[in-house]
Image 1 (cartoon, rainbow, N blue to C red):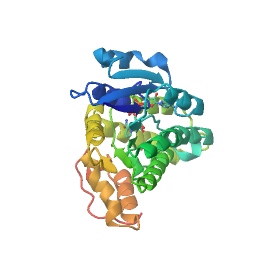
Image 2 (cartoon, rainbow, N blue to C red):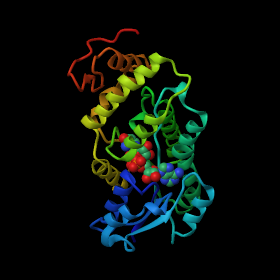
Image 3 (cartoon, rainbow, N blue to C red):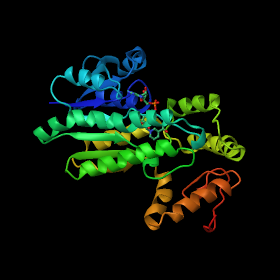
Image 4 (cartoon, protein in one colour):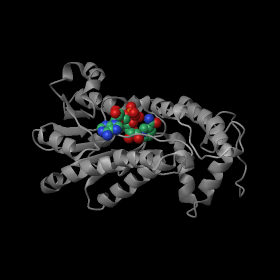
Length: 304
Ligand code: NAD
């Protein structure tokens, strides 16, 4: 029998692409419940699903921030959820001083507690049946802190700690960790930033954010950003694997930076290297210890 896959956040980006690819599986191994907060946005998904719609793919309403919505959605599913994909998420960038606590809590409610809420709902059934797979779209920012992404990174670190802990109960848990992906995600962030004033932030920090970080971030999406299709291929491999990995990075360009944390457990090497790459290299942005835009190689890591 096909496995029932419930995916959150399918109105756009990775969630939409994943729902469509699984629904078109040539071996018809999946019955996809593609969910979204606002069903008014279902046209793009339905068009992309084509003839799979109503066959191997159904669309359902689900707001991961609402207990009622989660209960309502799960009660409409025939049978049990075999694979849960926690994909719904949002970003938040900017100098911490200028961000409201409410905006930060919204990120945690969506990215972290949204996933927790769904897991709590499907876990008893998975345990009872001694089967099930929980997939989480984390990020490289679940493994490394990134300047001006403090709260977003914290929400992804929270997911990493939560699901690693759960994995020890020997459930199938997989954290997928993409680098930048070319979806609406970046545009939504830039739209937030263009109108935000970041009150209470000193001019130096604002200058670093607007004139150094933002252009570098745009360049990063342009130069090493993956397509949602590439990321989805990695997720499909994880879902179809007989022995799913706990962690799966999708962008090899990030491996060297992430490895700095393993190499030096004090954390200094990672912090100093990224600081140096950001503030010393005139055009910044590295990955792999090589500046992407001008090709310079930082020679050695010096204290700030
Ligand atoms: P996206 O903005 O296209 O998709 C995010 C989806 O989550 C949207 O459809 C949005 O409506 C939905 N969503 C937000 N709040 C919700 C809620 N309360 N209930 C239900 N749905 C909600 O961006 P994406 O790139 O496809 O992001 C998908 C996941 O991938 C996110 O968890 C994101 O953190 C992660 N990710 C993205 C990138 C990137 O660069 N795009 C990189 C690493 C990880």
